[in-house]
Image (cartoon, rainbow, N blue to C red; front, side, top):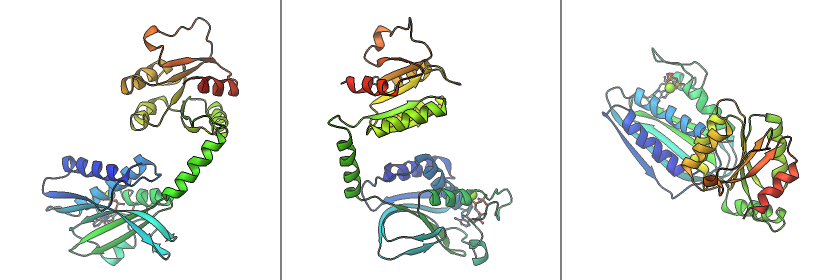
Length: 296
Ligand SMILES: Nc1ncnc2c1ncn2[C@@H]1O[C@H](COP(=O)(O)OP(=O)(O)O)[C@@H](O)[C@H]1O
Ligand SMILES: [Mg+2]
């Protein structure tokens, strides 16, 4: 995920959402930063901080979002625990609002702690949860009457490490290019078994069991996905309905259908480039894999 794009996107969204008396500035002190994080969780966390900042500036003020990297040469203590030495991406959300006193700062991450009449107190406890999940850290600095800054630290993998992982994967592929596969099936067991099998073959795999989430995920990842393995019968959206959405996003999408029966099922002419085939359930794992490597 590109953190620069994400934070920039949030700052744009905040310009439309927050009161016009709040000016919003986004600065990136570095180029693209790609880190492995759950995009929607991290987006939510940063948005929570922006909303809090705006609440702290009822008469207006300045909201600053900054993206930077920081190399820690020694362990750093944060509210969410120690960070080990290494390279981190740091997102800072700073306001020049009310600020907090010591007693408040000490409690802000507690679930349900709020000083607002209509507050819920869940925003920051969610933020710290997300940070912990990503092995990151959070630092808060605040001065009464002057403002507050939240710094979110996310560990970065170095380019070298990533390259090694990729090269290892390639070796596992016995000469075949690495395939990126998205599995969409509501049956968790089958999905898990197929997921693990394809990974053992050196494929990069992502699985989604809720048909409603697929199009949204595909929008952000279509460039990375070579094949979609798609169950025909699912709650909410059928395989065909999901296919139509994916096709609308990328008319080059490649789909392998899984279905209870395949007899008499025909591929519509117009989608003959998109639909690799149908596989009858229960599927033979090796057959799925062989079907995929046959497609060029
Ligand atoms: N930027 C900020 N400036 C001042 N106080 C803040 C700021 N962010 C959070 N706080 C304090 O932390 C408390 C908890 O925040 P949060 O968990 O998001 O819950 P809520 O926003 O519902 O109160 C807030 O009620 C407020 O007292
Ligand atoms: Mg809040």
